[in-house]
Image 1 (cartoon, rainbow, N blue to C red):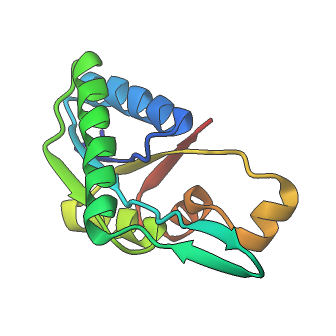
Image 2: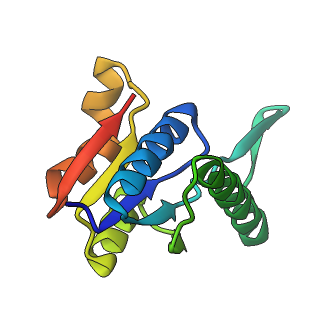
Image 3: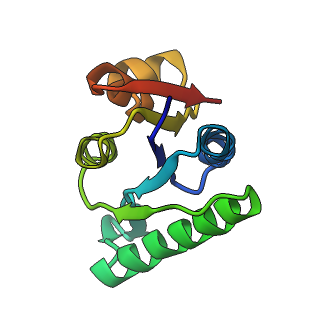
Length: 144
């Protein structure tokens, strides 16, 4: 039924739950599991007198953080009896990255976590899982 399952991972509890469920489905259907992660840049702002200094993370820091998330996801998949056949670390919008990976591998299913943004935040920002579900060419599962 599902030959290729793409799981969006970001290190959150919801993404870990999504990974657990994707592994169960992959084992049941002998599916190939593909992990996709896009590090999101967090900046640090420091008030200095009347001004503000914003420290952007370096590219190396972003890449190192991405590798840590993927390393943890691989370990969790192994605990669930799965081994990903591909791992993709992107550097664009997370929804677009997951959709690109899904198209490239011919995904039958995309599994994402849902963070449960409040009504106003969801209205203003949208959510990665919603954008994936709206634009995907395959089945999508969103896990809380």
